[in-house]
Amino acid sequence: MPVPSRIVCLSAEAVDVLYRLGCGRRIVGVTSFAAEPPAARRKPRVSGFSSVNFEKIDALKPDLVITFSDVQADAARELVRRGHTVLATNQRSLPEIFKTIRLVGRVVGRAPEAGRLVDDLRRKIGGPKKFPRGTTSPKVYFEEWDAPHISGIRWVGELIEAAGGRDIFPELRECSRAPDRVVTGDEVVRRRPDIIIASWCGKQAKLAEICRRPGWETIPAVRHGQVYEIKSAHILQPGPGLLKGLQQLRKIIKAWHHSHSR
Image 1 (tube, rainbow, N blue to C red):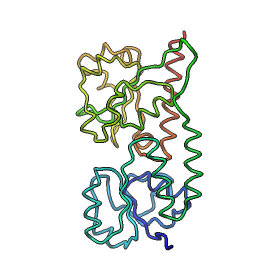
Image 2: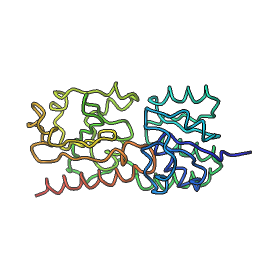
Image 3: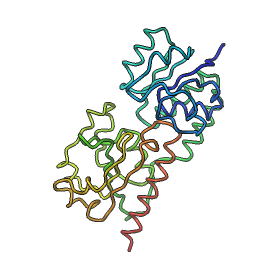
Image 4: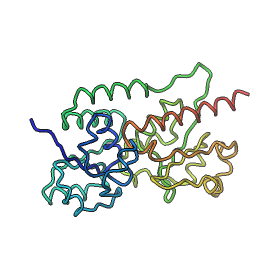
């Protein structure tokens, strides 16, 4: 069965996955957010995340376009209308991320390689971290956007647990759409997170401004200087790059435990 030989990726994690599966040479166009591996930065740029240059994609004559999320639903529809074959994914959890990697592997003829990649990711992420009896897990507020305040998507909560923390908005995990995860500043204050982590979808987080929000000076995370940024490329792109975000989460939570053991 023929496999795609000219692939356009409108999301960064698809680029990363394809390179790891040995298909980097087949990629003919990428999103402007594609940074890993460095070789991907030399590929033609055809989109942002919500903005797409359809004419440029047409000119590349791809036999497969990979899109991600409901945000790119309209782009996927337009690409199909233009006659392109589109693989649209909408993974929201770690299990769904693993399934998506396997799906991409089957589509490009690299199923065994995709299986090995998933097995490696599962091993490195592990399950929720267990601490000795009597040890407290820090409460973590993860902010995906600042105005309005949007709490983290499901896989972020799962990574927080794998690192040994507790997501303060676990009830919002099943909300796949960002507008459904909007929270109020007062509610964040009420839940008193021990750690605040900001990752503002492609723009730099302003930690000092977070600390100056009305009433937030009472939050333990702000009082004790436990406010951090993790780049969105390391935790909001649902692919192998999440390991970088997990490593940072583990470091942050380990530092919190160290500061509370004195």
